[in-house]
Length: 300
Image 1 (cartoon, rainbow, N blue to C red):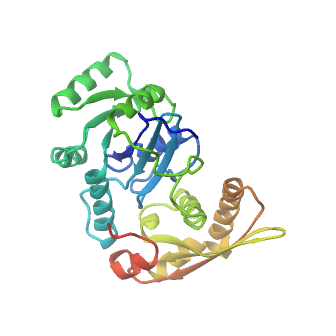
Image 2: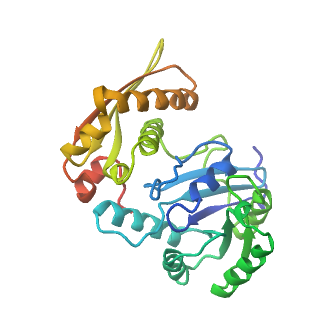
Image 3: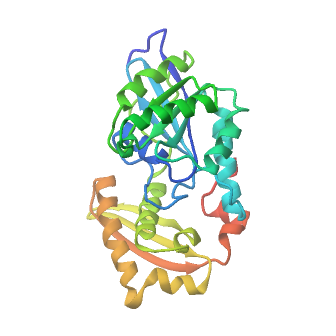
């Protein structure tokens, strides 16, 4: 790859309240699944880099947990710190909101943006759900009045609407710099991390109410063998009562999660998978910083 003198490279922080479409946006831009996605808020718990390399630019998207008010547990406080650090470090900030509704949590994020040094592009997501379309003009006008955004761009991350326009716009805001990562690299996360996240995604989709927020997944073993990849993973829950829910009657939930996860992991890694899952209790792990560090959560 020949690097031109005007090559641009920088960090683009993707910020917004929970469940507004940040991970869907990053996945759509990358054309692959970098971050797991569910309809439940706070699905993204970690800072994940997604590296998009072109001939004249390398855009490093920083997918972050949603900034939220309810930060009672250590995990929630850590997630908020992770998002806040991305906000401080970004060369450009993409502020994602839902074009169909504005909430008090959006206001909270906007307050943080007012102390940011980097330019901010507002993304009005889910415009495919705005009816009639004339309402979009009102949404843009309201957004313009809230803050001095560098740009306001209506998009649909799920439908890929207007993402090419956004990608053409971003490089102008990045510093002139050679690429920071190899051109074939798409993310900074390990295979073990992505496997654990796929398993957690399946659990989140199958379980209801508060249960998904009390569990996490840790891959203990990932070994490439002649017949495929052998993976052992632990599903950690906070209470004994949660263990039965995660296992299901006669192991029904665990079997369904295993089948569904195995298909996605095999597609992700490109090999046959042998997956073994266990459910174990680690009491109140989500409110213990030492446990969080051992389980792969970072302290920014």
